[in-house]
Image (cartoon, rainbow, N blue to C red; front, side, top):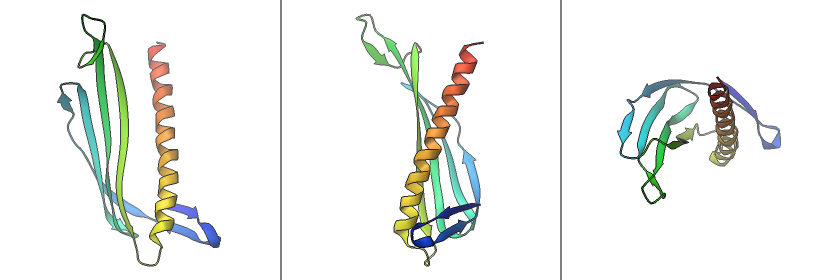
Length: 125
């Protein structure tokens, strides 16, 4: 359930029930990948579905001291979010796109900050 204030004094209220599926971890030559897919099964949109994608890339140094992908010396994780949203006819798509774009940036930043906090706490043990 969500609520947003939109330009021109409009308020946007929406609810949705999502079906989520977490795929198995894929082991890749350069790291690991995991997807979480979701799809609205009930709600206020014509369509609301997408994927969270986590990719952990491992880096190591070869004998020439150059960084190459595929080792376990260090790693870098990327979180991606892909969503396909189609609102009901009464709501202009541009308003929804702009609001979602802003909120996604905020949500991903909060997830990054929390991940950093957890990693810092874990490595200080």
